[in-house]
Image: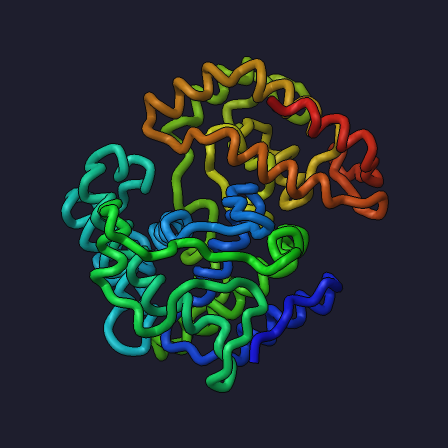
Length: 373
């Protein structure tokens, strides 16, 4: 029996969690798929197919690859131990594909953005295999509860019997291909997932961590496991730190004071709300400001300053991304910022400065967001 997606936001969130708890799983794929869908909704990276909002299997494959990419490193730094298992049998296929890609490049610690530039053909081969794995495995099964279909989130045009040949023809853009690669989101799902992201993400992370600990049959410290799977520090920011300081004219982004030698790089949109190491999301700050801001959203004054700064320094940032082979899609970052800030109400508290908070002003926020190019 197919189940309609509820319009009430709280009921919808409970249904998503119920789906995650009740669907059978032997790997962590369903968590990666759901987080990938949430991220695409937050970025407004949607395909409009008639009255449906959709994402493509290719878009989802790229997102899932990015989620798993840092998780193919050794669990403990400076060791040659294998990555943690994420499947009940052998290592999950998607992780194995990424590990093979890194071996092909000869560098297990390479960032994804550098890997794509280093060998575009091998990247294309890998992402196509990941796309096929998602089509064949988790996508038809993610919404199946007690052997019954429950299309709470999306509908797709294939089932468990999809053939590799069908997908290969579509991936090679053959005229004879009849494979439909759209994942059609149910009405209201995109907005609901984006609105609930800050609540759903840590819950999904927790379920993912529990599954990984179970699959590896060992006691894993929660904080260390969370950092390994989802931590911002998994991608060192050192290569771009000095150039960012120059772009910020040696000033702390938040207080405007001269940067000390021990300055830090901060994610303007906090990593806990959306994992984005893109060049547009990074600002420099002194340790006191950065530590006190933590995972809070910055106030309207900071948002407006960030918007203007992104506009004024876009050429320098794009050049830095090119020089350092860094993630440079600033449109994605501003899209996520728009999603997060536009959902705020006057009840939300925003960080203004050291130990200072104020209620959000939705009208001013809308005005600031309207100024993004």
